Length: 177
Ligand SMILES: [Zn+2]
Image 1 (cartoon, rainbow, N blue to C red):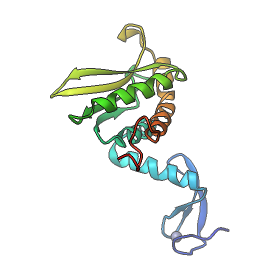
Image 2: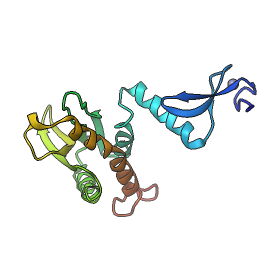
Image 3: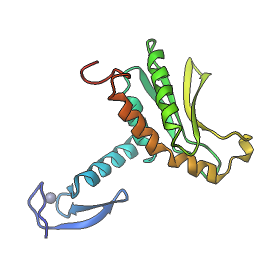
Image 4: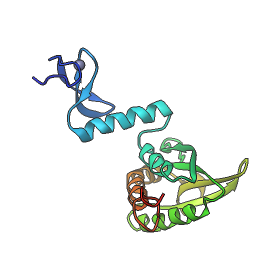
């Protein structure tokens, strides 16, 4: 039987936490196991604490790495009601260049996504940018399958943006900032 890395107890048992298979200490609640899974539990707990659905949270985190972006709300969508996933973004005054870079990343991601992702702009207490999927059909015709397909794109979008942020053309690496 495994030993708790935190308190040394042997009351460590296999458990599913936040939908992830890990080991939990019965004495101190410490979560351990495969590093990737432990990190996923931490990320999902953080998402819950901040009130984000776990499937949209990696994308929120990626966008929050951009200095000129502020995430002003996000939803993973609701298949039951036809509400599509979205992220609301606010831009710092010097954020247009980053918006252009985001659109460049989206262009590339859109080759692999099930839905085409766009950024819309609207006026809501200042400029609000909305990252969302496009459906090419009337709002009332958007069905649960559309929403599920759009939701399935979220991890890919998060990965693409996180990756591009580290590339020189985005220019926001530790060296460039
Ligand atoms: Zn322990």
